[in-house]
Length: 108
Image 1 (cartoon, rainbow, N blue to C red):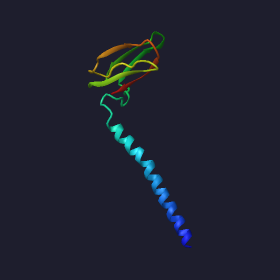
Image 2 (cartoon, rainbow, N blue to C red):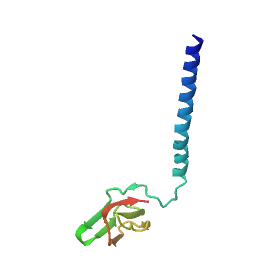
Image 3 (cartoon, rainbow, N blue to C red):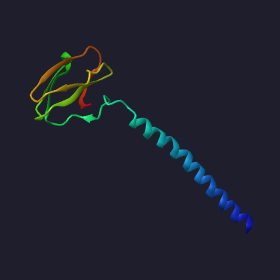
Image 4 (cartoon, rainbow, N blue to C red):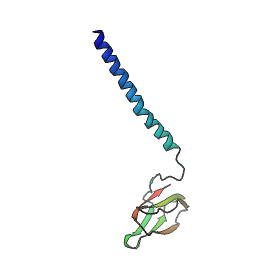
């Protein structure tokens, strides 16, 4: 009986140690994620940001129709993204790229 209790106690200790070891990197990555710069992308831009994409010309025209200023950038898959800039309501801009393909417009 004593042997069985030690085994169960040892298994619980090993499980607790394993859980603490697995949780530590997650906590560290959460801390690292909160330390990312403010210019990191947040997510896909809302529908009020109009996109006119001509993929074979590697061209996109983006128009902010959201009613307020938006921080936006164009993401190019396998290429160079546009910089993250602030665009006022009804402001539009164009972005051309040389390598890669259009991915999406994101808030940043």
